[in-house]
Amino acid sequence: MFEIKEHPHTRKNILTGEWVLVSPNRSKRPWQGKVETVPNDTRPAYDAECYLCSGNKRSDGSKNPDYKDTFVFTNDFSALLEDTPDGVINKNDLLVAKSESGICKVICFSPNHSLTLPLMAEEDIEKVVNLWQQEFTELSNNPFIKYIQIFENKGDTMGCSNPHPHGQIWASSSIPLELEKETLQQKQYFEIHGKSLLSDYIDIELEQKERIVVENEHFLVVVPFWAVWPYETMIISKRHVTDIGEFTEAEKKSLAAILKKLTTKYDNLFKISFPYSAGIHQRPVNDGLHNEWHWHMHFYPPLLRSASVKKFMVGYEMLANPQRDITPEMAALSLKELSEIHYKNKP
Image 1 (cartoon, one colour):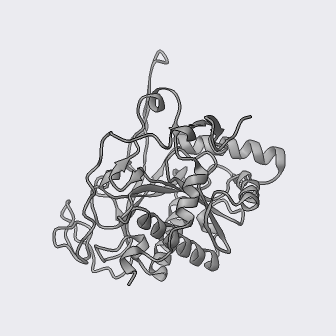
Image 2 (image 1 turned 60 degrees about the vertical axis):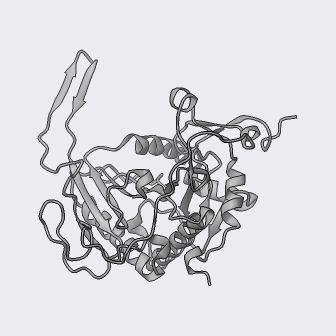
Image 3 (image 1 turned 90 degrees about the vertical axis):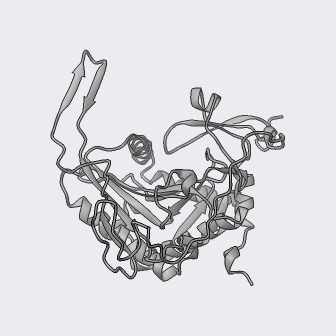
C-alpha cells in the first residue's frame, strides 16, 4: 500500500501548476559530496568601508544620510531603468526580444551593520514593513509599473553583494513569469470556488497541523505541501488581502513579529546566520483588480543537512523535475521544535 511518508511521489504546487518529486526513501543516504565553508557572520555595528552604512559614501560617490532606522534609495546599479526606450525585436518568431523598463530600489533595514532581521527588535522590523507598504503604494501610483517585487537575498551563499542587512524592490513594466503562473492558478480557482486559493489551503493546513511552523492572529507560516527547497517556508495572511497596502496597523505588527520568529528559527537550525532568498508575492498593479490574489511571502533557503551542506539544483532537477529527499512534514517539525529565542541571545 502506498505511504506518502515512505514512498517516492510527486506533489503539485497549486500556485504554479508545477510538480516536485519527493523521495523520502533517500533521506538517510550518506553524504560525501561538496561541503561549503561556513561564512563568518560576526560583524561590527559600523563598517567604514560599507557602502550602505549610515553617513558613508556609496560606490557611485553618493553619500548616505545619517539615517537612524530604515533607509531607501534608488539602486546605483539598477537592473531596470525608468527611461529605457520602447523597442521590439522579432526575427521570424525565433529571435524575440522587447524592451523592459522599471525602477529598482535598495532598502537598508537598520543603520546597524550587524543586525539581520532575527536580531532586530520587533518594533524596528515593523519599520521595515511600514516602508514596504509605503514603497508599494508609491510605486503602484506610477502607471507604467505592472508588478512590484519586494525581496531579500540574505548571505553571500545567495550572492548578496553587501553584508549590510538590506532588501530590494524591483518594479517592472511587465508581469514576471512566476507571477504570471501564480495569477493564472489563483484566478482559475477563484472563478470556480468564489474564494481565494490560499484561503482554502490555510484551512487544510490548520486542520492537519503537519506543516505549520509558527502562527499568530494574522499570519500562518508553513512548509508548503509542494515545497522544493529543504527548509522552504511560506508566510500567508489569514485574511484574504491582495497586497501589502491593505494591511492594518495590527497586521503589520503581527507580520513583524512572525518575521522575527521565523528567521530566528532559521538561525537556530544550524546555529548560523541562515542564508535565504525571500520575497513577497502580491497582486499586479495597474492591471485590473485581481481579486483572486492572496498575499503571501516565500522563503527559499539553500541549506540541506547542516550549515556546511548546501542543496544544489542539478542533473534531474535541471533537466526534468525538482526533487527533494526530506519531506515537507519532516522539515516543518524540525523548524517548529526550534526555540524562538535567538541562539546568540541565550544566557
